[in-house]
Amino acid sequence: PNGIKGALSSAALIFFAYTGFGRPATAAEEIKDPKHTVPRSIVLALVLSSIVYILVGIVSTGLIPYQKVANSGSPITDAIEYGIKIYWLKIFVSFAAIVATVSVLLTTIIGVSRVSFAMARDNLLPKIFSKMHKKFSTPYLAILITGIVMAILPLFGNLKQTANVTNFGSLLVYAIVNFTAMIMIIKDPQKFRRYLVIIPVLGLVSCTALLYFLAPISWMIGVSWIAVGCVYYATIRCHQKMS
Image 1 (tube, rainbow, N blue to C red):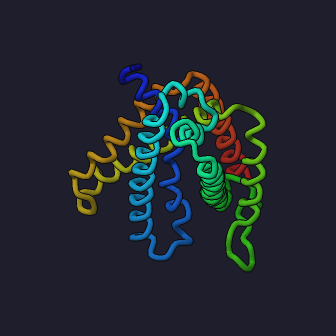
Image 2: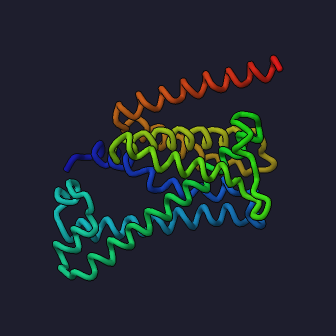
Image 3: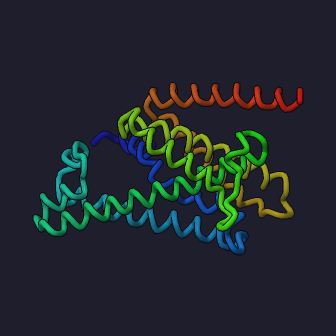
């Protein structure tokens, strides 16, 4: 009922739920045969999660009116309680939702800690983030710090605001990645088939379009953090040149 603008605004808000598909790329150094494994895992993760999300959305809005789903703090359990009214099923779904949420947090910790590790290796973060565990060969301090920061962050904002800011960063990153892929395909026609350029072009256009539909607060906070990052990067590089 809210037209294409409502659909795109919703897509922009829910984008963070799909960002896990890129996690394998951040841990490529630790994966066997990454050339084949990483692309396959990314495609499988995106396709399977999309199917599950779509089916859950159809079932939820089929059991209860979409207005109630929109105003619910736990729409899936409310849909079951309203439509099926099986008490044990409600408990089971609530437990499954908690497990799913924890698994998403764990994959986020894996991704962010590996990015922090790579940045520390390139002298863009303190060396503590690149310290490896002697037995497991993992950046354990980066994992611990990331986990602690993630545990504290929910105290400083509501879920919708956090999702909006997260989406701004994610969409901007994916827009840059698509732009980079587009340039690579154009510059190296011997390695890449030219018609493949349509994929990053579509990715760049869609990410840019979804950025437009994010809430203004996400732009304000996101641009502010980018400014802080630029100042930090310039300071680090200046210090490195002087030393």
